[in-house]
Image (cartoon, rainbow, N blue to C red; front, top):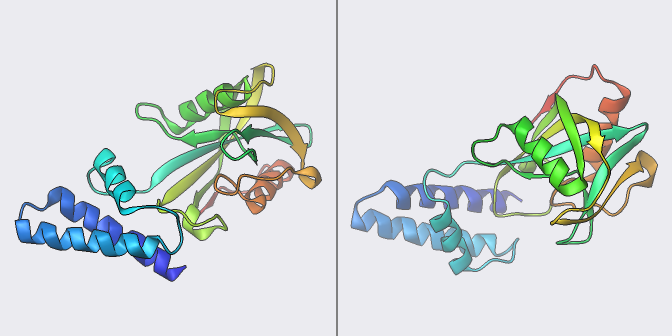
Length: 203
């Protein structure tokens, strides 16, 4: 996976250079670095050169990790998961943090949209670097924010991006959407359920 990390780093350098450099010859060099990094990425993820360039055009500026927030809601000894329509697998409700919303505001919105219930966030459990956990290869760099919430109203229902919402016990987990959360991460959330004084995990 070192090559994947190198490719992402080269791509970040190329994106920053293409964003801020005014010198025509420097821009040509950064453009070549972008092409090389894309070739390296293609060994791990299915993506074309045009897709890489269009994503950079949509998100110009100095590249930084994206923030993905995940809600942790327990009912007795079971955890809330939603079935994603994209891959028909299960994940903690959540998604990208949106502009003008704090992490806690984001997760309240995501849980209601994906699972149909209103919640109150009360504890940051973990802030994890996706690179350091057993997720499938991805061209982006993510920070994953896990926030524990208490259900206060509403009934479970599917959303626009989800087809089901249900609670699962730790020993009866469904097939997980590994790009969104791993089995180890779900097990970590159950550790917090058993030990509420467990300190926040980061990295």
